[in-house]
Image (tube, rainbow, N blue to C red; front, side, top):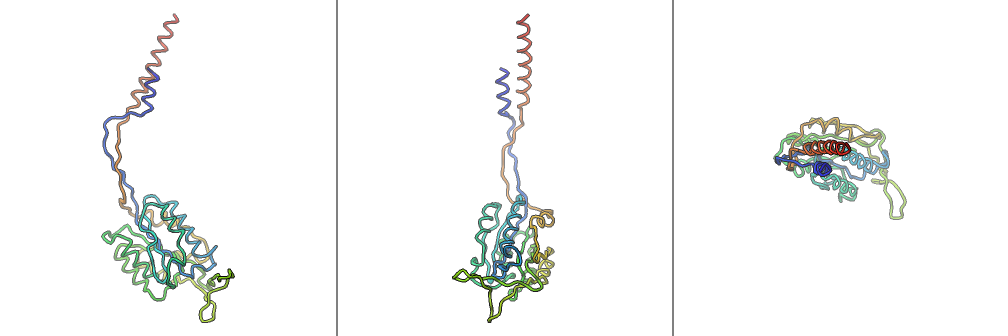
Length: 272
């Protein structure tokens, strides 16, 4: 009987079933990834774009409950991943992002901010919305500061990450059909891409966010998240209901112990 009581205790029997709501709390985060040709510049290893994609992968490693989406942009923009808590799906979307994702050249940061604000985020919500903008900042036509100011009115904060050399700049490599590597030219002159920190700083400031000038160094998106986004107020994004029980396995363990003592006592009596 003692063995039977132990077996019953191991099944963790319980009484008084009651439903309990388990909520996952977090924020809505949209990564705006610049995939313009200038992001192929190699002043970051192996280039600006791949360096940025690795950093986003590190960010996904530390998220817990937040929803993440991705918008790729160059001369136009496209939602590559809607807001989701499926980080595996986000990683798959990240792998496929490149200059070929957008069929129009340029760097229209303003359009990307508007896309995230108006189409990815829920406009019925006033808060809990963050944009991580990763770019070299060269935007000459999409009025990014105006877009940032309107995003701020929707409760969006923008964290801008500036990549690339802001002094001399870097050439943009291209590979010909013969596999030979050359550099992009415009009107016969090689194009040099420089980081525009001034614009990115203004964008972040307009929304109450922050600007990180990475330049040609390294950066840690996981640290950015931990220091700036994670401490912010979070909302309930998803909930599930489970059944809770009052565990009573202790009763059966006590019964098993009592039976063992009784069996030992009876065994000793028989010897006498």
